[in-house]
Amino acid sequence: MATQGLVVYAFSGDPITYGHLDLIKRAQQLFPKIIVAIGTNPDKNYTFTHRERTRLAQQALAHLRDVTVEGFEGLIVDFAYEQGAQAIIKGVRDPQDFQYEQTLNSISQSQHHGIETVILFAKPELAHVSSSAVKALQTSQGLVHDYVPLNVKVALEKKLSHQVLIGITGEIASGKSYVAEQLVIWGQAQGQIIHNIELDHLAHQIQSERKEPQYQAIRSEIVKNFGKSVQNNDGTINRKALGEKVFADPQKLALLNQIMWPPVLVRLRRELRNKPGIVFINSALLAEADLMPVCNNRVIVISSTQSAQKKRLQERGFSDEQINRRLKSQFSTKKKLDLIQQSINQYHFGTIWQVGDQTDLTQFAKTFFKEITS
Image (cartoon, rainbow, N blue to C red):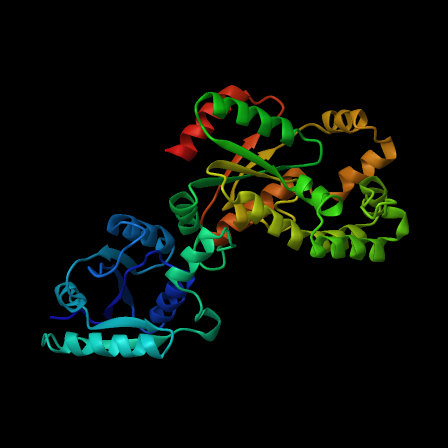
């Protein structure tokens, strides 16, 4: 006997995407209880094993009430019958999908279980989202956090790119580069392959040495908005002169970030290519620039005393006035932590590790590497 209001939504989930999640949430408005059934088509080759696909779906859907995830083999209509389901939910993106599901429905009806198929059409803005598309994007180091939940993004990066991405952030002159350097040294000594990509260095390259037409245009746009005084004789950007302008004016700093972040993300994707192993994405502005999904909300937050920060900036040749402007221009550690936690809550995924002046880096490294490689 069928259970009133129970339906099965079946797909292979290699991997589960936001297209699947949208259909599940819409189905929740129609049916009180949903079993998400992760199946296997013997004619297909899968990136993830059946167990992995089921686990990824369970993690991605854990925050939804009255939704359970089960793996199954054989005919979906037999599985639905055994679960006592009234209907099978299927998602359709295009006419080809519809024709395929129509054929499957005819096969299901031939088994005489009396279980109907209910079709939900993909929203137009999600019609391009598919498991195959996201895997192709990941293979080319494209941005996939708008396609899949972050736990799935982590799995794709590990499976297809052989990478573990971790953010490193903190206030200016808090010791981010030093901590990253020490973690790289410690990890490599333990046999880990580790890379540290500093986004500020990528920005520097765009403002100076990159010869591509788009980056030359970016430099011209900076000069147009901030004046000839920020341009060197060779056409590159004088970062010190530019800093004097933007750190004294929050609106100008926001404009510079608006100009720079799109090309920096392109350079980041380029840098990520052919870099297997643990990859640190290091920037003071990960939280402010809404880049937390890029590193999967998994971030080491470095903090330091203001006196230590000022000392480091003085050693870089900045005056007291310049130091104060720079410190005031960026969010405090507390504000960064709040933004990161908000992102974790939004995506239902992420981890914060905190490192301060008194942290034993050796002990931290042991715990940290064990956690991210287990």
